[in-house]
Length: 268
Image 1: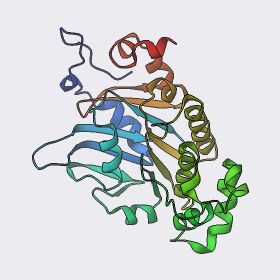
Image 2: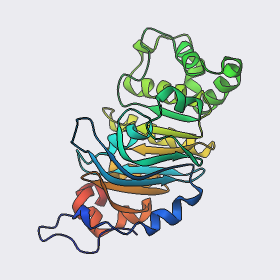
Image 3: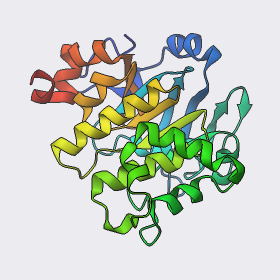
Image 4: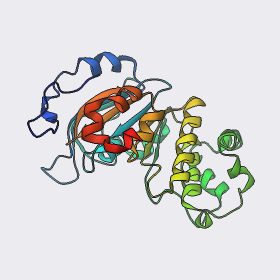
């Protein structure tokens, strides 16, 4: 497990102590997507990310957790060209895509599902999925069949307007639309946010199904315990830096991670 060796006196992890990048550099060699030492933020002179590293290998499901304000969603948005990266690089299959526009990233195989406003409510389910396939309309039928294998309810209700769906159903449509482009990597920003516990479980099951269908996934999640249960590898961000990186199983059982980031949820 990669993490600081010496905690601060008050028990908090001193993120600045994470200086050994050897595990990241070794693991990222054959990554589908990798981020190296990202500095990024929304306001001039104010960084939310302070040297964050990340990589995801082919077929991996990687989770990003951490306290509120740690930079989790900012890291995801920076990969998709929605936050300006001031230094550092984002690389997709060896190509530098740092600060590339979102529509160019979609054409290169990066899918992104935002946390909110992620469907077109006035359009039907089928029309939402057609919007997802607008760059490759000839493959709509093939991709529609693929996503309906994962989300059978979408095929059954294809003519229903997205605005009439529940929050969990809208999340299903949003993930399916991102899959219409056959992405090489799918970025999910807090897919369980605002959902009931039952619907949260459904979203995590569906995320696993997408991953098992061959899609590489990077997921930011507020439900840290559930995220670590399904991901192959996890990152804990703190103050825009990597605090911990290990397998999901290692992180969920690490006493220091439990104490500082998971609390009693990890013991449930």
